[in-house]
Length: 223
Image (tube, rainbow, N blue to C red; front, side):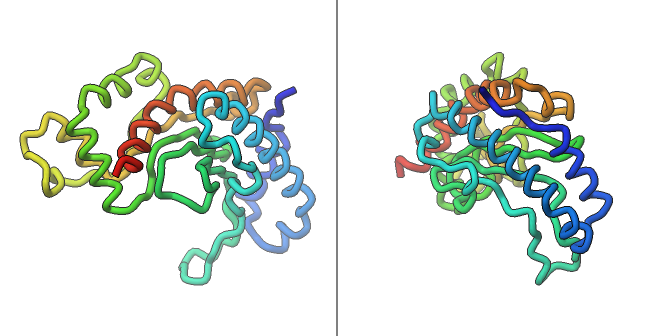
């Protein structure tokens, strides 16, 4: 039986938004642990679902993919101690490797979403991705113009003002080559997050993302 996000998990995050203080958190640590364990179980089910079409996640453990809720405030003016969301990054090395394509699950009241692609990577990898988009433009366009892709996903990310150095100013893929992050998003309402079938629904979205991820991975790995 698949797990699902409990309403109490969202309620905890809502209360944390209103009471983001160490004293309150420590007094309600048991509620946090319950919410965290619920999220980990859902992430674990999603990993198993993705593994049916993407073997790169097969050896992942959900608990190693989930980000810590504790914020590092040492060098920040914002001293609020806790994140008011839960997130999990599904890559071959869990949440500690941001270089390659992967899947992301973000749980936050009113702001939940699923995502995929490459968010942060080395300049050399960005160049490889752009080169592949430029030279294999039709393959890339076939992915992002797929009906399901267009219905379920939105490509977002910071963009350069001008086409990157080393690429033809008249390149027909100019608009895509300007991206600094190659990421796609699928927003989720609280109702969708609390759906008992949230695991299946998330896996279905990630299956649509998979060809996009594979394109990016091939660009980086074929160096």
